[in-house]
Length: 177
Image (cartoon, rainbow, N blue to C red; front, side, top):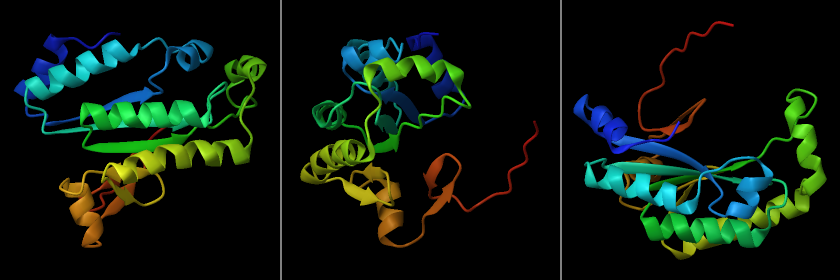
């Protein structure tokens, strides 16, 4: 499904003021390998629409360790996130588990980066965010220093749930299979 102005406007009309976008990588060559077709132009359009409609905080999720990805890809994606003005960025590692997700087996044809390569990718993104003045939060998040997540981190009033870091007090979660 493609996010439209109407989708974002409907979310704002019922009180949503934050948005999280799963970009993974801004470059088409990596997206093509993992069969994810979300061009940079579309991500940029949705980001800018969200700002225009008044979303106060926008998070971008990036991913490292994808087949065919390099440290250069991560640095490029991090620079794009900074250029867009993302308030927060999560940089997650790709989990290659073809025994649980058989469709991932075909990605091996592109080469799944080894641990040292993955570390170099993460650090390429980390360097961009730190150079741009973002606060490193925990093991995989970055935020502008004025963002409430960064402020809570500085005061040690931050919590983590299954979706990442939050300034909200922990709550019970109930799930079913």
